[in-house]
Image 1: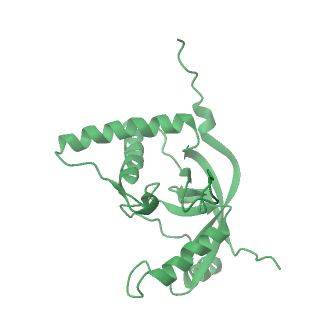
Image 2 (image 1 turned 60 degrees about the vertical axis):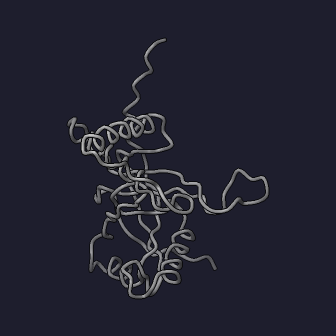
Length: 205
């Protein structure tokens, strides 16, 4: 059987996409006024796509729901609590993207998982485990994605600018459905130069 063709040049995605982020109204105001340059990257151990600034691709309503959930469900004294929910939009150049709808990227993630198993065995430590409803706390997936980035760095390969993936989430959309109510595409931006600008989304009349 012949070896598969090498199509790495297509991992650099053309064009711009719109991303939406649920946050504090004050944070959005400072972004739009130039008081701060960028949103702060997330480095939680449960972040689905590893470290980066997270956006819902072309879905401001999902970003709003996230901000509302953080407002209603997290205690006011917790760091994750959002006092005044707001949605900020961003224009994003995906650049060199670990795109998890792409066969090459999925193969690379699978190899990184094998490397992570070996590394944790040497340390005599267990692998992280995904937890929660819909695996909302993706400790294993985060560790694997970070292993992808680490392996590329070790092998002097170009760093990924962004990570992009669809996520099935929520209840069945209807009886017998293959769709779920909160399906979405999420982007983690690692290279902040890929964010070309922020904007306030326009609500329909």
